[in-house]
Length: 353
Image (cartoon, rainbow, N blue to C red; front, top):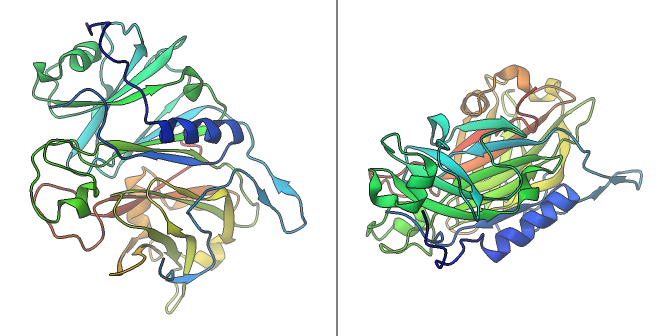
């Protein structure tokens, strides 16, 4: 096991502080896109509406002057696979500072890039009664348990990197929590355009594995669909996220404008459109627009975004919420042959019954 004299892995201070605020007030996001600790082998939007993503707030005023608060609900964890140079990932959750042997990587079937998996908490996958060390692995772990993988990352063919130690309270709060590992986990990328894929701080000796952590809003409107947007893509650009109704000539409806890396907006969710106004999910689209210069845009079918999140068109309904999550390299980034491209997936804030 780990030498007790070795430094304790921790989350980056900015991630820990923002995560604490998110869980206390019910709507915020945090991002850590720095080299992980310890282990491991403003342009205009495409349409009208939306909210800025520079600093997500924890409450919002209603048109009548009241304050909308995030309701308590079942504790849920949704993990999105956003590590750009990993075809799929698993996570290890270990009690800290005394990790026990025997815990297996989760989930049993690795999460493909741009896909998601969810847990209803409490669950035996995440230790209780202590802080929790979270590690990301990609590749064949050879059946090794998590304690072995974290203690000796070179013991198998898998690449293993520790995200940090999360407070026990993280996985106890009555919120729907999103955890999206991001950046790059592999050393040795030397192409000139690597920063547009892995983030500007990447170096061949220090990959940029990080994470976006957010509380997904459960605030809904009976007569409309509620939306949020999360920027969990490469930390090299700001982004507008929008939906375009299925009708010919329809303008896009911006969900969040000028989203910064690692941010979520609006918070709480807002409801800009009804299902009648959106039209068919098979014909509607989700858009990602890079703001600033140069601008570039990717538009994909809303149905494909829903499918990536394990949903069908029935998930988009009045009185329900949808969260759009952007992952991958910058739209328009050169293909280097070893990374995943930009894409959008759609999640439910309540991923499980």
